[in-house]
Figure 1 (tube, rainbow, N blue to C red):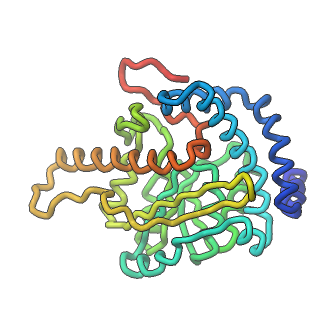
Figure 2: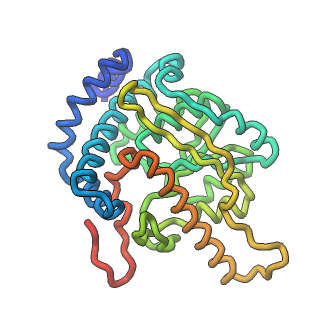
Figure 3: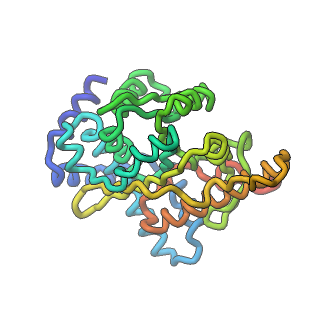
Length: 304
């Protein structure tokens, strides 16, 4: 653990060009040592971009592995760099709208799909708000888990709610007026999910995003992050609140459970459409190494 922290501190003190060279070298190592993840990324990209040539899809895989590796190298700055280093490496815009929305609505949902710059965005946004909360999956190694928790609470109080605690712990912070940083696009199985298209493929998608946003009437602000391989910097954009998510039931409509389910499913499908449109901005920088299509509808064969 001390060696890992020492390595991160050393990397944080390097200039951006030097960290880019380290990342470029380690990309070759990633390709050799993480073959299972490479296969998952290739399978995902083949499923989502069948219209592209084999060569074009292979290039997306290569670009993805480069960005994926660099994101781990750059966590050294996110977690151990100075505030000036973080602000220089990560450029953020759109965050100016957050205080007014918080004052008006009590809390907000920062919707952060799994892009390569996910941790860059989270770190940079801690610079602007005194408090925040998010759900995370604890690491198996307690030392690594402690490092992650420390790194993700750089500049303000970040309440990391273990996924094992469930959503109730997160809702407590919403009631306290704390903004939440929410990741909507992992496959956690059938429980609490509906199958809706993502790049034309049925994907088990958690409905909690729409349910929480609707019940607490939270503005949902998308957080888009992108790494620039030329400069090594990360661009983070906090978008305006989504106008069509979630789709609130009409005030004169009977509040039946069936209508509620239909509404939530429709909202969840539109959520995937939004995420797909953001991924298409730079396809290589979505987190393709996770098994987004792990859970299949009844009767369908597994993809992985």
